[in-house]
Image (cartoon, rainbow, N blue to C red; front, side, top):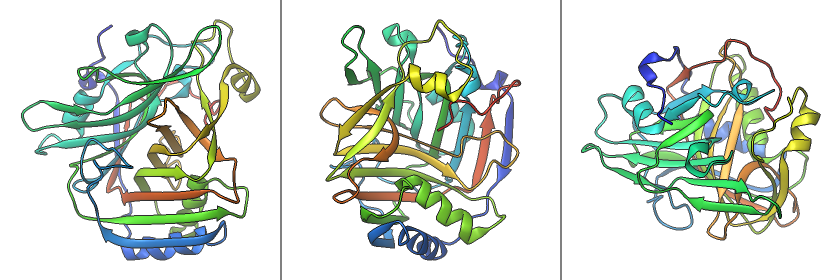
Length: 321
């Protein structure tokens, strides 16, 4: 099945408030210290994130940083719209048309035509100036019958996804970024919710968007993987949770995605991170299950604008946890 050209899709763009990284250090340090026993937040020169343990397709997170929200859960629920197929390369060229290279990472629904089944997408792709790609994208699915989690790297030339995605898009350059480390969770908020709440509290009514990568180590995470598309309409969050398959997944998990401070009247998904590992685990991050031993490490950057692509005409808030 071919992807829908981005030129045919509705497109909304808004500027974001871009706090300095030093302001972000203060905001995150203050907020995260309420949720974790040990917190370190610094403005640093980005290391080479292609190296272990992060395994990104590009070395950095800087250059024309943009938050992109494509489609949404209303294309999946109550019943799937199988026509909603998009292409990461197409989006890269449209979002940053003058960039030498474009790096995209984030969370969404994987390319179901590839495996003939619904799946999670963990997007991690660099589009080079010459049109070649470095593709480190993974998908996670629920295997038929035994319902195990099966995570695999997509073929090099597979750049499509379906239904929805929350993407951090940049030129993938080295530069200053936020380096966040947390240990021992004290409260119920997960790592990303704690970050999001800290940013929202610090910048009040300003619109802030953040994206990048975190790793979960020395602990486990509660994550879901979507089963194949439901033949029965899913109308409530309870319906959705009964359809999803939940797992407790061990670290190290490498999670990619975005979070925003508020909806901005764009029908946004406020936070969305998917993870993969080198040991066949992958899925949608909810929270860690080992608060006393958990450890997070993240590299984040702040978006300069947000782009909303193909927002559902008929929308709802089901399935957005």
